[in-house]
Image (cartoon, rainbow, N blue to C red; front, side):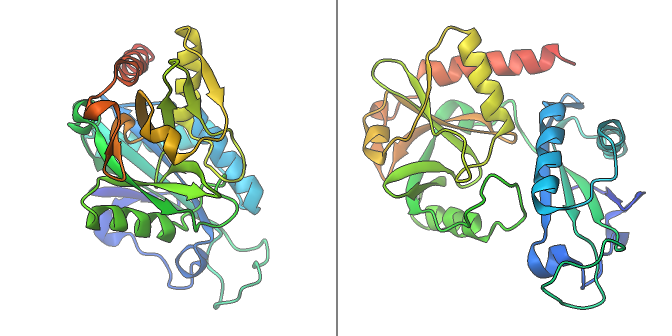
Length: 285
């Protein structure tokens, strides 16, 4: 966790970062967030994260008063002040602090709360990237606007906790018999025809920035991408499966509900995509 955080136009020690108990992000999860990966002190796919933040704010009617360049400078200063070489920057915007706990949206006179901090973590050489992870399926009980990146993440926490209790690494959500996404990631499979399949964008999944980058990268590599619904049975007989997110980039999935995928071996397509994605991220610096 970072020692210096950003709170409402100020960089302060984390011990001094205080928010009102009446902040709507605390009371109602009335807030949105973004997580941007940092590799070698550089931001990865920042433009995409800013565009998604703009969309999330617009969908909820939240005020985003800072420009892309201003927010980027905040990110870069946090990286510098906390000597972050590899990890992530977390940014959260709430509707702000009202005089009490009212469900109605407050007047436009209140100011939004903006918080940002860094986390040191391993991205490039994380062991899960080479050994793969196991997942279990859980019912998708989340609200109907998963396309908005809000801080209402209790369903995701419950899913991860259930997975860990079952001895698995993570969970994937199932809705009406079809895979939606991972508990904090998008989900892909590679079928026997070497087609990469992922669920199409809708209100049921998050429009992942890494997902978008991987689809573009796979297309450039001449790989076939299909955005369609797919079942758990298709996952079980897939040649490969993997998750994508800003914090994982790509992690192979080698089992689902204790059923091995590709005999538990990590497949070549996910590894190739990850390597080229990392190479391109480094080149952009």
